[in-house]
Image 1 (spheres, rainbow, N blue to C red):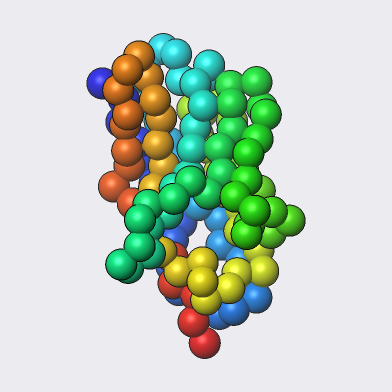
Image 2: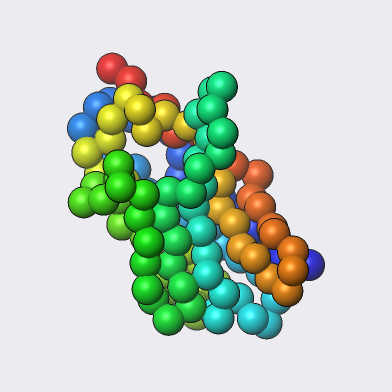
Length: 116
C-alpha cells in the first residue's frame, strides 16, 4: 500500500515562490514509477501539472512551463515541485500521485493560495 505525504503549501504573494514536497512509501517500486503533481481549483476539474518518470523525464502543463520545476530524490522516495513566479491562477489544492500496478494513489493535498 503506497502512502504519499505532501507538505509545503501556503499563502504567497503574486510573483513569489513555494516548494512542495511529496514523500512516498510502501512500495519497493517507487524509484521506477512516475510521480505526478495535480491540482484542483474551486469549481474546476483536477488537472495534471507536472510529472517525472523514474528515469527523470519530465512533463509540464503549458501554463507552468518555465515557472515550475519537478524533481525527485529516489533515495528518499520524494518528489518536489518548485513553483516560481506564482500567479493568482495557480491557486489550488495540489496533490501528489503515483500509479502502481493498476492502482492510483493520492496524497491528502496541500493548499496553495496566491494572493496579495
